[in-house]
Length: 476
Image (cartoon, rainbow, N blue to C red; front, side, top):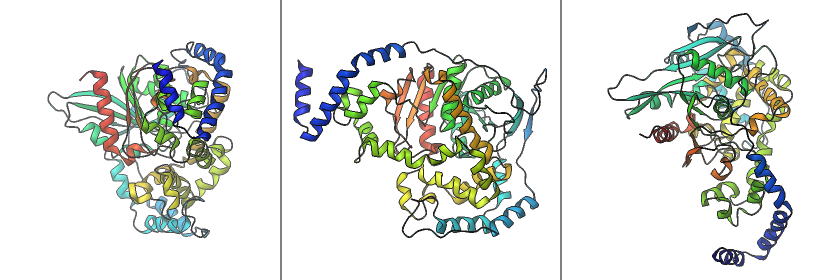
């Protein structure tokens, strides 16, 4: 009876339009009730792991045995490479922007000229290479590909516990995203520190690109498990955002016995099932029915409603995804040939995915969170390795996987999981939605600031949240 009275009071506080919306939603609830029960029965049948499988992505046929040698690697350049870059920059043909458009049409070419001028006259690639090489880097051949990774061991401190941790980047990032957070994790004065491994996804930066079709997040997950095994680790923590979030999630689904904990800063769930549908329809008005907090309501609906805040924004920001998921080589040939085109294509994401409001600014807000040297170092990793096309192909391979094989989407994650929800992430996923996939959530944090590139934007916030999560798992 108390519940009924609470519902009556909640309904009486709504205006007629809101009451009508609730009546429509209520009708949907009545019609879909039996199907909802069926859905939850189906959810209970989820498998607890996905097959490991095997693969060969190198040129030619798979040999009888793989060379498991790990060898040192350093980034290098030449005067000829730098001069070629300058020659191409000097031949750039610009298009004038429309008046008062900011970044609404993409990268504003007026500001682009400033970025390119810095690139051409102030940016020192050799100096940035010295920064890249300050951490030990290696390569090893796995499934026919030379896989690049950074491996940083913490300094020995009496009484400090050291745990292995893999960090996985996404697109259009690289391992350089982690250079701000690495010292916070490895050189920590806390009772806990990490031995960190940061691999480059095959086809990104310094890792060899697959020579055959089909290399998706499941293949990357398997390759990275093999990497950790080759380095002598049997149990380890994982952290990721963007593609790194999906790859590390697949790793937890694939070999949960090896994953001591999973920490993510891009949260994923499938917008499926009647429970999610109902929460979208009426969660703004009765959030407690769906486990929404006030912060969930603010992030999901804002002042413009769910459709505007989520659906329409996603449509505005995912044109690249449709191109790369269907015809990556067509668009890729242009940005692989033009360094300025490459910079505009990639840096626009660092603007918008950091904060959607940056679209209203002529400079895209890029220098609010990043330096031009840091942003251009990431661009140079793509440019000098010629890896933009192979990185874009990763979208097509994963689109094919999701169409042909839904198994990874129907497998829960049962390892201890920590979720860091940054307020300017492209899409907000409440904890109540996340539980559909992540069945053992140890921590869920509403981060006070930051967007999609958390390790690059807010390294201290991410490091602190990761540390607190691992302490909970380790009971420290």
